Length: 75
Image (tube, rainbow, N blue to C red; front, top):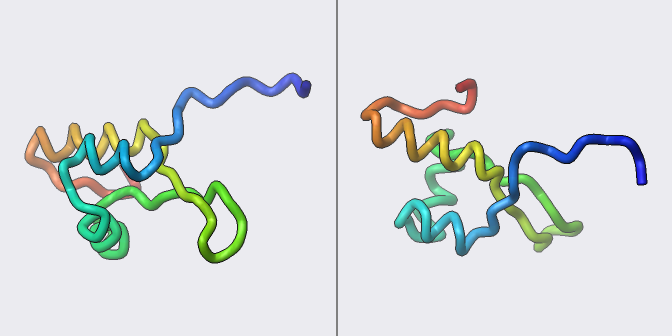
């Protein structure tokens, strides 16, 4: 096994993101497209490959919403 440290974030699959945010799948996808929600990362191959979100990015989005500030990818 290579001597690479594990990342300090976890991957959340879509059902977990829906549960955390309270948004539907289509609402999350719409917000991603508008740049108002973190973009998912591709986990699988092909056009229908699995995707997930970095937990740290979803939590940062939730914290920004709770604080009443607009989230942006550059945060």
